[in-house]
Length: 127
Ligand SMILES: [Zn+2]
Ligand SMILES: [Zn+2]
Image (cartoon, rainbow, N blue to C red; front, side, top):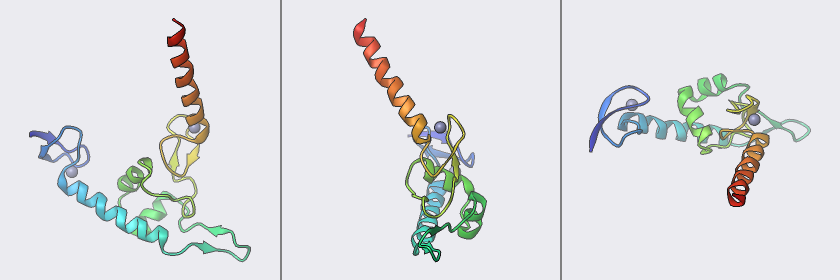
């Protein structure tokens, strides 16, 4: 075990490099439960049966759940939460900055990346 600095709160604790302190891990756990419950407590639909978003923005979602934004963002980036029916474009694609619901990249950029990866593999084979 080594002493490391928590990437989130800056506290020094005994653990693995690149991890968060037990306090922050607990906050993430609690945050996950709160947001999960909020998102899954029944879908809202309008008269036409279309989904009504439960929150207009990331800020509103955080206010309603009382969960800090960094936790919601972390959970979405890691695809632990699905906000498709609850929040429109909570995150940005890390490549083209298009609004996305979860993960790190939009589908287009994901496709581009896997194509590049595939071409890269082929290039290597030819050499
Ligand atoms: Zn921490
Ligand atoms: Zn993109």
